[in-house]
Image 1 (cartoon, rainbow, N blue to C red):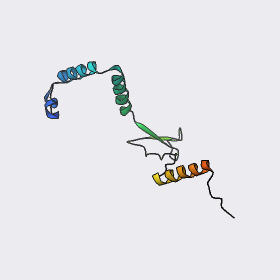
Image 2: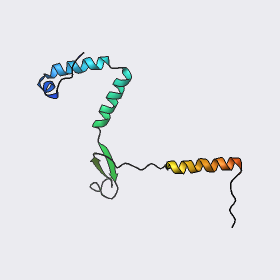
Image 3: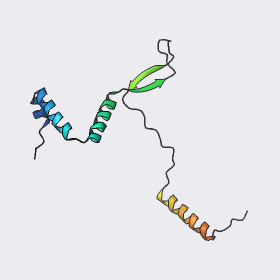
Image 4: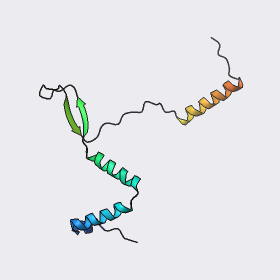
Length: 106
């Protein structure tokens, strides 16, 4: 069993030795995990683009591109119900199936 070395120990190693260790680990990895690793590694290197139509890019395109670190998290459109609300809905449906719902008078 191989022990995990410290980051300081890895920094002292030569670059060919580090590449050798990495290649050894990559050869043991399954094809699926390797494909995922490559995809997410390359994806993380790409800049995230935000398009702002209010500013002009030297008047040529009318759009300014900015790279940012992270986009704001969008809210999910699907509404979530609390445990109480779900219980009330189940009770209502149960009574509706049984035909024992009370009629409201107007």
